Length: 138
Ligand code: HEC
Image (cartoon, rainbow, N blue to C red; front, side, top):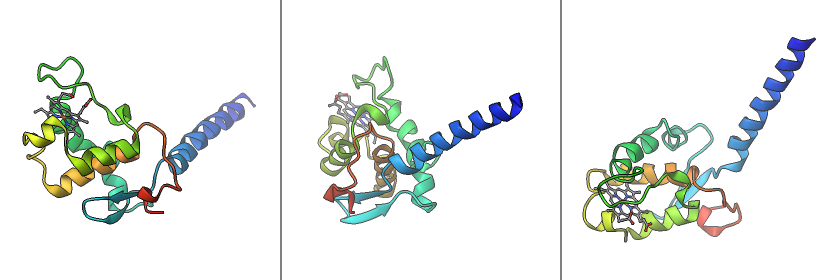
């Protein structure tokens, strides 16, 4: 009986976790530069790549986090996905007005890779996603 209770609790925890990630995170991202709607959920290639373990997450850590770590000596603020909202990340990547985007520090990434990093940050951003926002491409 006790094991059944433990199993029930585990299933409940798993389902909560699953529902949280399946429902609460944005599934699409409108990319202002390419004017394309990117499907970042539903099991496609961008679904995998917009996760921490996919290309977007990996490049964020390899490139952006080479400077934006805690206590770095590059003069960069500490950044992680939740530093900004989904919308704010989109604007940062659409405008590219940050010191580092302008001085070429993003240059080691291809346009495609930059979009994957944007997908990753958008998807895992601080939670303020609005499904009715036009920017989210419906
Ligand atoms: C070579 C080091 C370096 C790399 C690589 C780098 N940055 Fe930066 N970044 C900086 C510095 C320095 C600043 C200016 C100081 C600050 O505001 O953090 C900055 C500023 C920013 C800001 C503005 C922060 C604010 O509070 O105004 C954002 C957002 C940002 N970077 C995002 C990124 C992203 C996303 C990447 C990867 C695609 C990246 N950076 C890669 C060094 C870097």
